[in-house]
Image 1 (cartoon, rainbow, N blue to C red):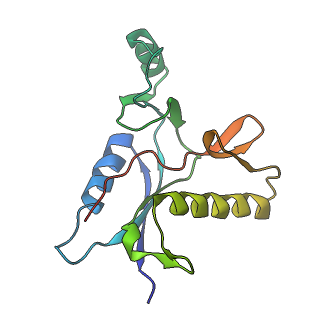
Image 2 (spheres, rainbow, N blue to C red; image 1 turned 135 degrees about the horizontal axis):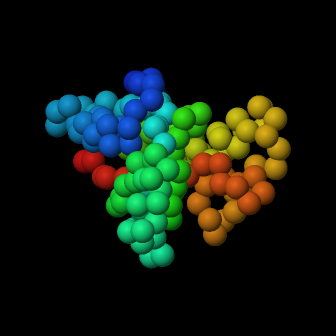
Length: 158
């Protein structure tokens, strides 16, 4: 039987509230059970900056906050990212060892490839043409615009 994924539709939440929920959901319920979850939401206007934060000064942080947005330095990769109303955000919280396909267990790399393929197919279905993977940059792209940040960070749960 395939693993069950519980979907949580939680509306519009602050970035920090969503992060706290993700941390709670990522904890195993007991030694033998991990509940896979998909958290779906929108964020209040927020800028996040990852560990590659060179070039983003305190003055830039103050400027963005003055525009009415939250600003958070995070432990994920990547540069600055805007999250805001109207953007559907989906945070999968999965124990990948529970998932497999015809090739066997799905590791992180294959998971990302499958996720990209699903989003690319969805873009095609809704009429967004030219969606492609650019190997040197994570995510999916339409022209110069990134439409999906695939993996920001993950913790291994044994």
